[in-house]
Amino acid sequence: MITQKILTEKAIDLLKKLISIQSFSSEEDKTGDAIQDWFKEFDIPFERIHNNVFAKNKFWDENKPTLLLNSHHDTVKPNKAYTKDPFHPHIEDGKLYGLGSNDAGGCLVSLIATFTHFYEEKNLNHNILMVASMEEESAGENSLRGLLPSLPTINVAIVGEPTLMDLAIAEKGLIVFDAVIKGTPSHAAHPNDDNSIYNTIEVLEWFKNFKFQKTSEALGDVKMTVTQINAGTQHNVVPSQVELVIDVRVNDAYTNQEIADLLKAEAPCELQERGLNLNSSKIDKEHGLVQSGIALGRKTYGSPTLSDQAALTCQSLKLGPGDSIRSHSADEYIYVHEIEEGIDLYIKIFNGFLKN
Image (tube, rainbow, N blue to C red; front, top):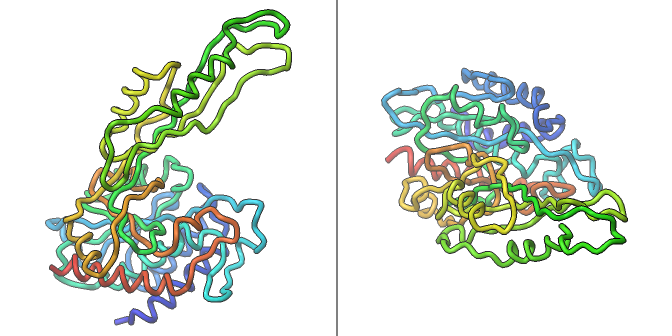
């Protein structure tokens, strides 16, 4: 049986390979090939749909519930503040640099190594399904959400995102709204008591001051932020309307539909949601996965950032090596020791959960 040390070394090598391959959302075919090569090396049967690569543990039993292990191999594009080559994986002072190293390559290779560790184990209380997914960063139609109909029923999931290996037992959902504030168009030289831009002032104040009543122990309050404003075409014309974009991060005390109904009924302007499918996520603190992590000294918290958890209807836990603060930053990196510790903790958590 391959040792944990060798698995960890190979996982770090795989991460270096993934970093060296450009894999922007919808362009992950070559990283998909690299992930396939891992499964081939360990004689693990796998399937591929588009650039999603997935595999089942050896002793799959249709009568058992299924644990999903999921992380993504697409990346955002590097920002202009990079001082290092984003596609050149290299280690400096214990940091492995490169685009996607922290978000979420370190999580992905750690989960793949952990899956491989348990692949041939008998008598586990859950099946294990490993999914390396595409288009997470763009929430594309071929992402985990689009793949789910082709997968077995999932009962509980771990989504690999950087959490410093603490237990994100809840995650905020997201609704984006488009708002329109109307007025009377006119020449700027003439009087106009219905200027759409001036009308926007009280609307902005309303969004700034509005408070949602329900709070959440894990996720706190719903957070609503006006993030874009657009109006006018030339200096001497009062526009007929002003357009706003509002970003709403939803806690687990509301459904997305409840938030949409509430705001559309009360907001002093026209509102239209872009979609309601990015729901908040959570897992019971008493769930065996969470309790296994707590027993190892890991903290629980609520995550404000969105992931592929939003695609799942089962209970799910966000957990992985690395730090969310580094995601999408210039000169992205993950500490090598975070990957080593991540694999070790994943294995220990699963030992406490899968073997009870």
